[in-house]
Image (cartoon, rainbow, N blue to C red; front, side):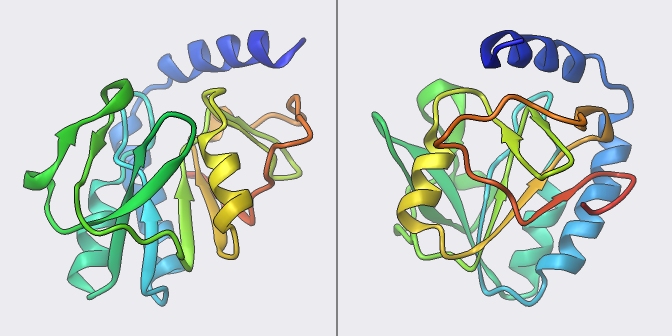
Length: 174
């Protein structure tokens, strides 16, 4: 199966996952433990079917860490400092974005995904924003967060795809 068909099937499977809120709480608790010592953290604001990130973001801000969220441009993205959910505006693709100062030199980057495999390869939405960002600014720890149902033995991988350092699910840390 090619990447496009695999992505469609994986997205359909992700939509059907039950208990996303309770599973997200467990994933975020593991993520907090893994990231608490990083001072500059990039993280996404979740869309409907993705692992929630709100508890993680609030806890990192409470600990005094700097949190940055992505803003997409035509073919690239930047990370903007985040202080409050009240400051968010709807940007490209309906994703909530911040207008805080840009910081692309991150210590840790928390990445959404559609699917991942045993080698910590990540299948995203197919636009390549994260892969291009990582290639340009990727001297940081790359952490994918996903539901266990998004784990596959093997996924289709392209030459530009970036491998993750960790993937956290509600069941384990890969």
